[in-house]
Picture: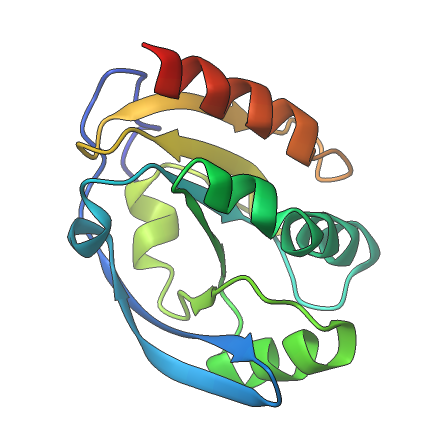
Length: 161
């Protein structure tokens, strides 16, 4: 397994299938990291669809989309469940953030966050527009996540430099 990327290090490029709820439609496509260059990006890795903490986290990020967009930033949420599972979750909770499926766990392993028993450590990575890691948070236990306010402060720091 690879090591967790360090701040000021380029993160590994990847492409994953996923989808996003737009109105009544769940629009599926491949999401490729290098295509987001030129804009900041939040990568939110979460252990599982329809679990209480993950649902709270994703609902908060979805509700905060206007704040993220104000910084020209997107949030991509990544777990090892299928795109079909993600669609069910998005529809059930009205989630409007792209949900990416790393069913082979290749990206999870590349980011060094695989964890026995739970699949992955809940982690958030904030990437600069050039694809370099600006900030990261890896939860020791899966019960905590970084809220929109924390990410907004980090985005504010990033865009003011």
